[in-house]
Length: 225
Image (cartoon, rainbow, N blue to C red):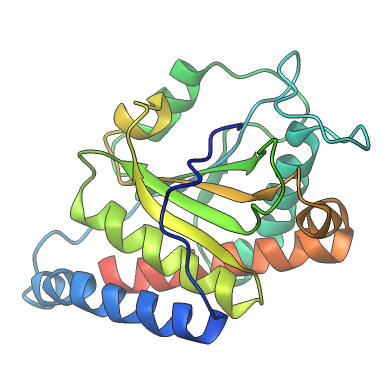
C-alpha cells in the first residue's frame, strides 16, 4: 500500500516502544481476560491470513523491481509451519500468485467463528526517512481488534523490527471496515526505504517477519481464547 501520513506519531527507542505497547495491551486485554475467565464467549475458529494483492494486482513495486504481492505471499507462506507448530487453525485467502477481490477476502473472513483477519501489505513513501512497520485497525474497530493490533506490534518488536505506528485507519479500507471478525492490517515496512527493503526481500527477513506475526497472533489467541 502507498499510504503514510508523515504527521502520525512514530515511536522512539525500541525498548521504550515495547514497554509502551505492552502497557497499552495490558490495559486493553484485562477486560477481555476477565470476560473469558467468567466463562463467556468461548469461541473457536480460524485465523484468516490475507496476503494482499496478487495476480494482475502487483501492489507497490520497489526500485529493484520486486512486487509487494511477492513479498507478502512469501511471508504468509513462512507463517504456515509456525502456525501448525502452535496448533493455530488458519486459512489463507491466497496461497499462490492469483488475484482475489476485496469482497472475496472479506467473505472468507466473515465465515461463522473466524477469530481474526490479518491482512499483510507493504508501505511506500516518496520522501526519505520513513521506515518500520505499521499496524492498522478500522475507525470503529472492536476492542479485540485493538488488542490484536498491539500484540502483533509487540511480536514484531520482539523480532527486532522498528515500529513506525499503531493507529486507526480513516480511509475506509474494505478488509477492515467490512469484516465481522476482529481485523488488523500490517504494513510490514517501507519498500521505499533501503533498510526495510533489504529485510522485506531477504529470506531471513521474511522468516523473522513471519515469526513476529505468529508470536503476536498466538498472544492474541491466548487472551481471547
